Length: 591
Ligand SMILES: Nc1ncnc2c1ncn2[C@@H]1O[C@H](COP(=O)(O)OP(=O)(O)OP(=O)(O)O)[C@@H](O)[C@H]1O
Ligand SMILES: [Mg+2]
Image (tube, rainbow, N blue to C red):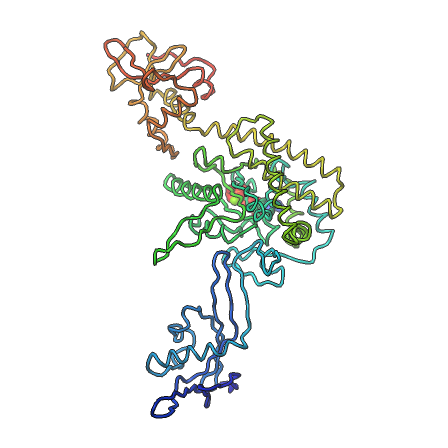
């Protein structure tokens, strides 16, 4: 047992005798000295933990026991200091406080008196830009003087200083000789270099509100490519990605807050069966909504006060074999990139993976954030101009995209504007560091703009495909093909009793008896594990809005007389429904 001298000084009314702590109290009857405990604790350091929303204090305590042994450093939450519930767990039964609350109070007071010489530390449990004493710092574990710690799988995030021009030239190769089609790699690179701008885009009111969805069959190297791009922010491989769909939506959104201004990946949207499909779709919906709206979940503390809002603060790549069923507005919240078999050049990939493992991309990102700091946010004036400039760029890229008249959802021009900004700053950074020339920069910005137009036009088609009215029509045609829905030709024979009647068809209209058909469509979706969360009325409304259904004068359906029955039918324009279902021929005659 080491006999170590306690470094504490006793100071009145406290006194240390043989490593026992005593206190002297004065009353009318005179002063009396009593034992407080059989050990002498002291504060070694006072740690402030900043998680990006709140700061909490913890104390690191050490001490010496009356038997002469050193009490090992323990971390105690500020709030727990006075209750000493930690004592038994951390220092064991041999540390005894004398009986009575008063002794605990005296001990707590004594501990606090030792804080004067304690080291003051600040630990950050969050990444990205943080203004400290008027200066912006980009927090990442391991790349600077500030202490940043991330736990669990987030521990692979790390930065690396000491960059050289060679690192930037090597990064340029990723752009000029991409390891997969440039339609995949260029948007990913733009996304990576956009992400450290999040803080300032937020200030400019145009934060990216989307995720990037990397789809493709199993083995197309989605996770591998995602890991390569994430290598700008840490040491990742396809098996060490920060998050996956096996995690709960709550843990993903909590991490999404922590990972400020850095890129992350939520890997492997792959439901193995219908039950899992529902679960994963819900998770995907929550994640996409969180990134799409940048809202955190409103939560309350036990005392009913509202907790700080914790929206996602970085950007995320999602990988998956399937596209999640997140409905029309969910789709608008992601930008899809599809990897096909053979898209990846394995020789290049291997080389770039080696560069990543050597830290080339981490050092490039360090250089990039330092460049941003020096160039745009070195003081309040510069920062203000920078934020204004970002807004101008955003507005101009958005209207530029709109001027091309791509038919698309409202979000797509904003997604394109953000990716353009990311690419612009990446190329600008390379140019200012002498890696590319001005002409090359301008040419590549133009090329990227054209590339995005092509990819965006394809996404516009996807969004169209996912519209509820279009899903309804495609399912209706599927039922007609399978014979579960039979539309009669006017005048043909058959059972026209309403309960068996699905509708009739002529060359202009599908006249649908929705009460019979709607449940069949719901059932078809449910059997194939697809969500169809729409009501009959909402579908009718959507069909009318899309110009597919022609309503009657007073209601959406029209009263139609068939033989002896009058019934309400929904008139769908056959030219429109055929186009949606991609049918060129007329519906086969039945019955
Ligand atoms: N440079 C490389 N050369 C050859 N194979 C590689 C290279 N890098 C990764 N791979 C391998 O490719 C395989 C498939 O990659 P990956 O796991 O990224 O595919 P995926 O599209 O994510 O598949 P899944 O949908 O099943 O998750 C893995 O076994 C991985 O180890
Ligand atoms: Mg994978």
